[in-house]
Image 1 (cartoon, rainbow, N blue to C red):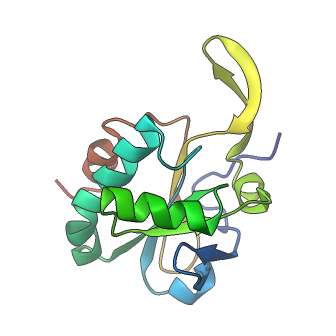
Image 2 (cartoon, rainbow, N blue to C red):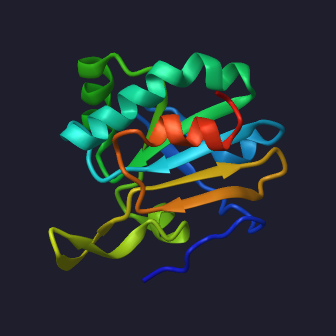
Length: 156
């Protein structure tokens, strides 16, 4: 299991391909706050709910100085279908190797229906303007997570 990040840690830098084929590098976003969230699979009910919630909040999050990056192990082509099907407006990134998931502690042993399995741990991080982790949340719930995060960030 990979190490979990905590507030104050330096956020591991990464460059990943988006659903539009663009390369997105976390350190290129310095000077802005970035919400990085990891989800198990595009086009599944929980992940769709979470992505739609982030999309619904995106304008107000951007207005408050936040960028939002959603990361999954899905291929860019599947992410493009996900964006189109659900009219998503946030940036979707592909981490097929799971290297970035592991660097953030978002892949490892988790409980699924009472059994321990290896997989993606639904996680959310807020990275500050200097690249440090401000918030690190693991095993978040898909439903209601964005509203809870907004409250914790003082945005509601």
